[in-house]
Image (cartoon, rainbow, N blue to C red):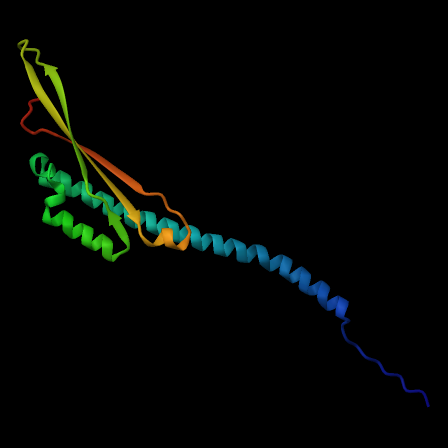
Amino acid sequence: MIIKINKKAFTMVEILVVLVLISCGLLPVYTMIRSGQQRISRADTRTIATMMGASVLELARTIGYDKAKNLKDDLEFQELQVIADRNGYIISEPICTLIQANQTSSDSDSKTSLSFLKIKVIISSKHQKAQGTEIPDLVFVTILTNPRFNFY
């Protein structure tokens, strides 16, 4: 008596070929998702740092020319530094530079002193450098003019 065994199955070679084809299709998708997540994280970090830097410059403009010279001693600035520290950012001490310029008025030949106050603040992330994705420090600069100078 002849018994025919009809086995329908995949061979090991066929299974390996299918696995290679599937992995070639999934690997680029995984790489794309991973790089997208890193870019989103980097953009989120920059957005938050930009908002903090804008807050510092807005504070300097709000308190005015005279008080902005001592911005690091201002309580609201110190509060911004504490909030930034809690959220993983470092707000540097503001660099305040007084710029003097001379301008001759059109009415007389006397020189009037014009002064500008340049305020520079650097915002950096504490945690992004530790994770290996280097995010550059953000530099914010504003210039305030002396309100007692008449431009006309």
